Length: 148
Image 1 (cartoon, rainbow, N blue to C red):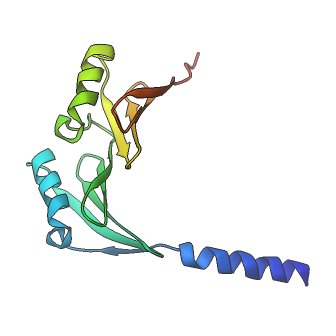
Image 2: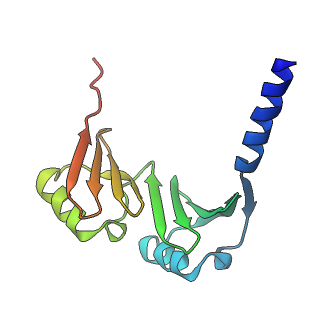
């Protein structure tokens, strides 16, 4: 009986979190997101655009040929850019972070850029992760472990 109760509770907790992803046309993205994609990838070919709904969360995901994925919030603000084969376009990086990178990590490429209202996180091509606060000040460096 106890196992049945735990199984039932687990299902009840998991159901509201289940995401509903639906493919949509590019022109169904918020205008703000469309503008970002056009500016950052003027020659990029859109592979897929999806809207994901979870409880009260709505986000958009745009996949571009060449292994790039962009995520946007409900209002079209960029929340993540992940590139597997190239650097995140400079146009997507705040200028103060770009300046910091040019000075402190001139030979590194940014492969993933994530942000919310309080934190900016970067993944570099060497595996290092950098975190910046909302004032664009570096607050943490998580160095990639070197493999021998």
